[in-house]
Image 1 (cartoon, rainbow over the protein chains, first blue to last red):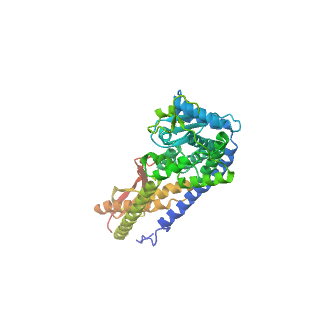
Image 2 (cartoon, rainbow over the protein chains, first blue to last red):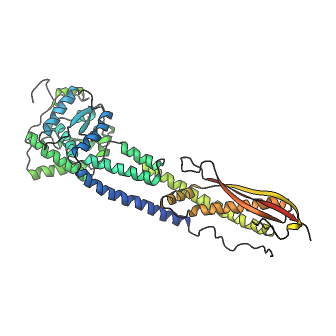
Image 3 (cartoon, rainbow over the protein chains, first blue to last red):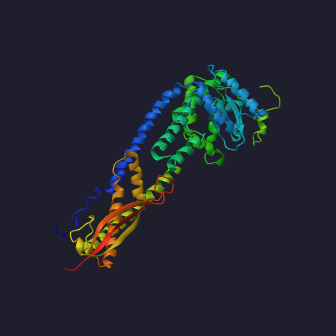
Length: 289
Length: 155
């Protein structure tokens, strides 16, 4: 046997695939797979949510109520708001879910619908309200979200996203961390259609309670010019389609043939919540509405 | 917003890894090919015995080792492969370069000893540090080539 020194002609140990092409192919496959699964699960979720009983909402609610301190004794302002809310609820078909409202000490102008029938109104929003009708409109709008189960849909979608992220990228991946953080936020952004549906629901509920729709658009109208103010940051980031709200509401008012009468001012018990000094929006202490 | 920053961060390191990694790889391969030509006359074989067994004057252990690490781009590709399965092509060049470099270093040692050939050559690849799928894993490998450098009696 004779040894002939020779170099191999080509390297069989490496593949001739361009790494960039490999990256493109793999990324499309993985991302495509994730997107498809996400959409399919989203559709399935919508179907499940609309058939879900109120019981599920209540169970979810226990997680949020403790965190946002709904168990505590309500303040006088909160008691009045609860009365207003209960008054509105009586016009809804009977359900096992109880609605509670609390006022959070926060200068931000916002209101949130949390799972379990909990509505959280920020004191910043109270200070911008100028009549009872407007407050009723805000509460009725949140009720609309509950009745349509909008918050459950959003939560379900985000749970799916976290599960997918864990399955594909592992528990330690920064992508999973990101998905988990978005899951934790209770401040949801509802879709345009969901917001419109909630607005229309609120309008009809307002009319049922008062017999007219004064104050339905006032609050949103006033917000038009306040987009850049920091106190309104939370509101505008969760309601990106604000501008059309008034227009759509007015169209709905015309369509339904609703009328506008006099607005009822807020009870003075709200003064302790507001930072505003406007006297004309409050009723004297103990006055009957 | 967070997501956008994260994606930009990933793309940046991917581009950096790909750019610098490819350049380094090309230059290394050029270097490897040149040296392999030089060492053509010093064969390394895996057989334990050779025909000129009785002519062996001296025999000594020689080793060549090299530690290679992956760039971000290769690791990212491997991560994607981990999901769908299949050949991890991005790792192939790293290991190929590692093996050839280790063999060349082993031959360097043999040349210093004026050996004629290396017999009973073996490879050993092992991971350094944490190569499991944990946070902060460094994809580092050591390739070791070892054999017996023999000097034959001159005819």
